[in-house]
Image (cartoon, rainbow over all chains, first blue to last red; front, side, top):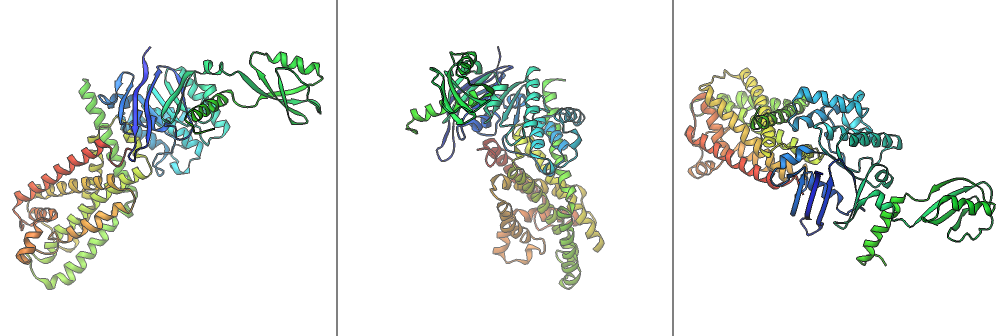
Length: 312
Length: 262
């Protein structure tokens, strides 16, 4: 299968000596929906910046659909659409002009640019606001406009750097649906996010970057399979004054009517309910205490920090 | 269409997009961009041309008002072509929308050409308006239309390039006014706009020859009136040499990403 992105031995050292990328190797297959996760300052934005030609690399190579960034930068840029983390548009221009200008920078004639701008602004529910100056749009609208702008030249690889930061849940869900659809139609997507629920529900493959190095690369399914325990929060029908001993199920009180249960993943939830029923405990509802991916992510980041002697 | 032809077509669309965006920008805010030069030069014509100029007498065989017209038009061209590029490009850096261009496949020379062309259009537009104002005060006759047009164009290109370089290096809005205030204005006023360098002592005459604006003012004065302190050919070569140098310098800065990439 063709690689949408192939990064090899990528190093970025900023003036002043900060090494943001320490020999990153990363490949993304064509058609994948790929999550790039990492704590703040891990190197995600620098990596994206290098791929999108916003940051000069120190050494290493970047290839996008077999086009080398050093040998054919125009070929690489033509295939990438970037949705950056920070708003970066002229606040005094109307929305439609921002998208059409971007098309123009990619060499798309004005008439075609207008058609494409309309298509993507409609898809992202912004067509009614096309003549509104950017500064008058809400945060969610600005985020969606950045997606429309990144798509106007119809890139094969779309890179989104925290696209739903600060966006309300309804818009976030509609953006997820839009991105899923885009991926189904064949666009390879790389996403960075701090909402791990977002990565879990959208992405197939995941890489974790920490301290400028890729510390993990796997499918989400394989990664989640590594979780040994799971913590559930149970809302009870009645009060439970004393907690029974349930062997492998470790119970803790949250309040009189709420319990936390830590269970080994080798057990089924049916077993848990059987055990609770035997002790006269009735459950009204249950939820995961923590997003599963979030838990793994925190474990991995913590492990790296401990290895480096940054944590006891 | 061949691959080369397609690429050139793309470059042309990109160039056109940048230029239209730039023209739209300065025409939308014409009160800030066009009007101030018109008011300033009108005052120059009234005060230096009519009120004081009538007592000064002829300069290089021209009435004083006629003598200062080329310089004042050129000041308008220089400042407007410079300011258009420096303020527009720096604003795009400050608000980060320069990234829209950096992520696109637009080659650096197309980006540079687009911004310079935008500056040239504003410089020449304001220059033309100032020329119309001058016509209210004196009869402007063009001795050589070709020389006039060429000097105007080359001057606008040169200062648009300088504005671009200034914007690349600028890290704050203060930085985009330092060069115009401390370099451009003194050079312009000492560039023979208001006097002939023949009036200066030998030493200052020699020093004036190091001022590139002197060549532009005199080249333009030759185009309008057929008189110049400097041989026309020298003026052309010097402006051309500066354009070439600043073009190569700006392209090298863009290649390295100075001021726009980390």
